[in-house]
Image (tube, rainbow, N blue to C red; front, side, top):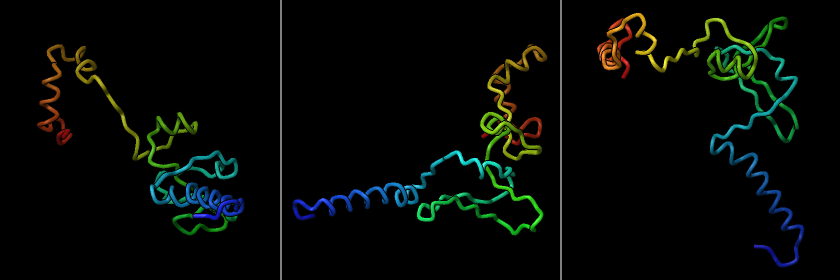
Length: 140
């Protein structure tokens, strides 16, 4: 590929490989890098926002692209992603009112119901779930 003894050519190859690895490859594979950025972290979260925060390496700056126009005196929001209130509380220290991504997971429904319905079994719970009892529409 390169004539022997050309350090500059080798250095250029290393730089090209680093640029490809850090810029092109993540875009091709859809890889995201997460960083702490004190100024951008001051922008508040709203799940319904479709904004995007990216890093422009050649300009050495972060870019916030809002999904809609904002009036001069209005607050701009970004989305931290589709996160439940548990995740928002754990990673960011707040919860979101009416969060559409919030979930409640009960791992042992039969155990929770047992004190109130002594004859309940896991099979009965699963059968009721599959038949859509209670308006749930089935669990499959």
